[in-house]
Structure formats: C-alpha cells, structure tokens
Length: 188
Image (cartoon, rainbow, N blue to C red):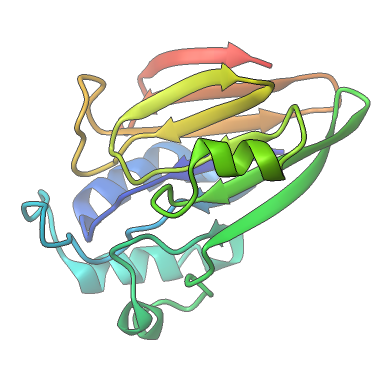
C-alpha cells in the first residue's frame, strides 16, 4: 500500500494541486495531517491561497483521504469538506514484515512524544504535521515522520510532502518536494 502524506495546506490551492498532480495517481490513499483551509493568525497568506478551490481539490479525492484535525481547522471547515476531518487522531494497523504495524496519525499540537511513548507500542510509525518542519527519526523504538508543509515551510527543505510505502517485506518513507524531487528516504 502506498500513501501520499500532506500537511499544513493552509488554503493554498496552487501548492495542493501541484502535490496532487505529482503524486496522487501513484498512491492508494492520501493521509492529511491537518490545517486544510485556513492560514491561521500567525501565518501569512500562502501562495495561491483559495479556500474554495482547495476544498474542491480535496473533495475530488475524498474516497482516498484519511485525515485528522489541525489547530487551524474548525466546524466551518467541515461544512466545506465532504469527508470527516475533525478527529484529533486516527490509527491504522497494516501487515508488514510478518507482523501488524501500527500507524498513529495526528496533527502534532495536542500530544507530546512522552504521551505517545506511554500509549504506543514499539515499532509504531507516528505521522504528524503542525511545525512545518520535516522530521524523519526514530526515538525509543517509535519512528516519527513529519512531511513539513506543502505551502508554508519553516525549514530549508522547502515545500514538501511524503510517501509511505508498505509491502509485506518492507516499509519505506520518502520525503519529496511537492514537484516530485526526492529529498530523503529511509527503510524501516
């Protein structure tokens, strides 16, 4: 199974369309880590900001979307989106390497790593957004991945997204620019 991972869209229809055009056809599902339509009071308007168009693009892919609520998402956003987007977290269990592997998805503003270490078993993959900074690292048996932001990056990697590919034998996580340039890759 192959997942496209996007976070912190913040209403940028232009950046969302670029990422969708680059990756959506090759992926089975799309994981959204929150902050879909609104830019938030601490952020500038992103390039290509158009909340109605952003909602249209997301709604066109609703059958593929797994998502969580970000700190900039609200009930009015749910009124624009044709898929449930207000849960604080979601989990998946997928077969890989002869066992079920848990994937915990959240935005990143509610749960600390200490919380997650108490709650989650070793070998869990935690996917989050919120910081707009890319992360690919293991700590205490849990792997953390943050794809950064597709519209308002706060790190030198630029506008980024991720690919998570799980087969019976391997788990691979890749970080890409939204234009489909590989930045980093890791096999777990």
